[in-house]
Length: 408
Image (cartoon, rainbow, N blue to C red; front, side, top):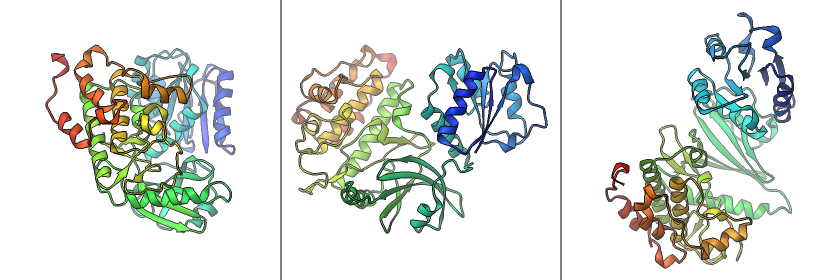
């Protein structure tokens, strides 16, 4: 990896260099100080770099002329813009001028920067070894039809890799689970295999597509669809209109209907487990908590709580038996967050959040969305008997024409 940092602030260049070298210890990081060295000469070899980190303003320029000019040069890599006094207008203008991403300097974090560089590389199909993953581990999987590109995420027992087909260059994601002695690996293996067996039977536009499963020594891997649009959690950082909220809710409900029909509960429905494709459609992912309805002996163990407290039904939070109505409850929490831009219950501890799901009054939507309140209360009522009993009931409500925002 090779990066170019352009900024007049010596201290800030040092911070960015540190962030890059923590992630890529062998990276070559060049620095350029415009106030002393002027603009980059026309013959400067931009094509030798994987990314440019450009401070704003640069070289005493108030506008974004330099960014635009860099974009016209042959082989210009992705340019990430960092502004001292950032605002929404400047962010929009930077992106219009070709910036790959925009950061207010005071709010840059190591992970945000690394994620941005990897995501941009993924979108361009340019992977110059974003992660120094041992080739031996990839070869151990016995996969010869795909080429490793980058490690997207990793924990003690599992990793997510971005890969491409050697012939077509189409991208997909490999989820790899390792069996680690004395670390619960056997149980994770079983859960992983169950996940594949369940999801592979489901063919639905709003459920992630599974392509392949492989077992090699102490590894299991699953090849699945690459969803380039990011997570719904990231989408919720921006305003969601009532029309978008209804559209997203309906797509998620349709996906839940499909998996419930196959005898599966998701049991960890949250914005981070819902992803967008390039065309804006949604797909459910991460069925690591999925459980066939007819299985009495869950692999997770009796009484163990899985899931995320912010979106967890009261019965799941208290480790009671759950059914399809639990997923409907979680969807209600997501629907509330889409319209109100906040989670329905927030507290200082996870157990306090779980308590509120069971005992606190249901929060009210903002006034302009008050017409959705009756539906919402039937989605995330504390008592399962007071909810929509099936996804089909919820969809019958969603399919009724809704008043436009102008009519509210």
